[in-house]
Image (tube, rainbow, N blue to C red; front, side, top):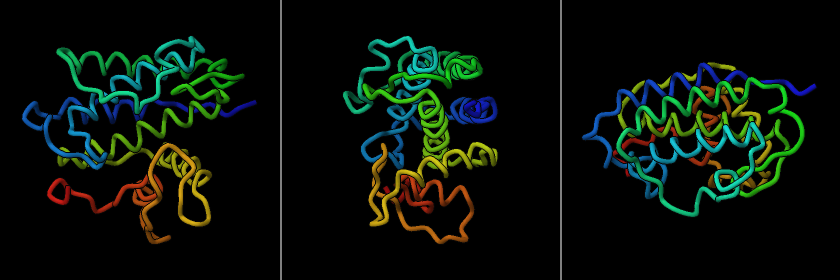
Length: 197
């Protein structure tokens, strides 16, 4: 039987970060290339809705559209929508059936168990992106970090390239904190700051 993952701690952490993001910070740079904070938050709103459908295997536009197909943005009421979507992710991934069989995310067919790990990893990495961009502290729970590390490690090739959804890993010392190693495997520099953008 596939091990299920509880999304509660990570979704609450992302919700707190979003709640504490000021409107004046929406145009600030992020570690996500050309994304400003507003685009990163728009992406979080969209992916938290899509991964509910992925869990329920309700395949359609939310599960078949590539995340690179357009640049997301926030709309009026985005904070409440993000809160609802994050809570919905927790509920959707609590169902044992979410972790079984096949589903689809971003137009890619994949096992439910893999989709659940990808969903959590999206929240871990983009939570870090948002925290860094807005100057907030970020301390995900160890279980969520371990899931992200295992997933991203499985995608990293010996030559330093990545076969996953993110850029090539950034070298990070093996004795670095687990969060820094996760961030590096996700193609980000752990020392990134808005002034370096």
